[in-house]
Image (cartoon, rainbow, N blue to C red; front, side, top):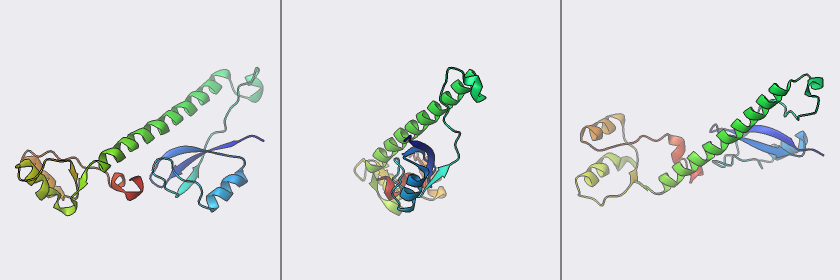
Length: 157
């Protein structure tokens, strides 16, 4: 019995592969909530359309596909796997960065000022600031980086 390889995507947009014994195995695991994203652990996962895997044969033309098309399909599959690996690596680094910061919540602007002015201990912080507060901080020479909300999601920690 061969394995079925499906392209999957979670509700945060992470792409990854799932290997199953059959279509029925995928359906059963999906129904029971056993499939989760390896990047963010979301269980909201959908099967994505995918091209069939193409095995090389001695006479690939008998299968209606040229040798060049087989190589192109293999390169695309490899690129997709590399992209998923890179995406997982980047998100892991963002999670580690976020975990190394102190969440100061809505007091971000005032705490950033206190740190900048030497009134509070220098440390990496994160929190919530309005666009106006961010602009004011930058005008005062205080660097601010805006992170997408999904990086701060508890599922990533």
